[in-house]
Figure: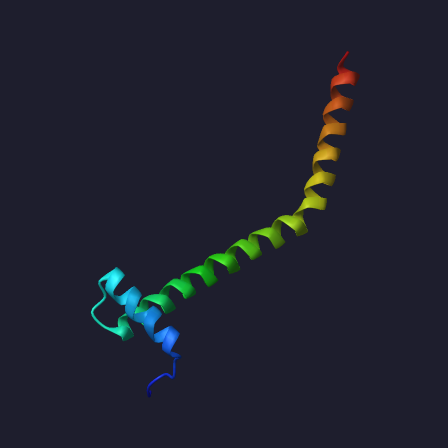
Length: 80
């Protein structure tokens, strides 16, 4: 793999981060950035999957809760 073309501003950002994070090489800064982005992407994907699961199950859960509540009230009333 070859060099990556970056602007002067990006080069300065990489150098500033390299010094601030005490990473010995510019490539190390890019590796750290990629690792961080990958981690964030995985977390966001998981959050999305959880939201979708909750959305899909919400109607069924409400229906089941309603049925269980009605059954409990019915038994309680009929025992008196």
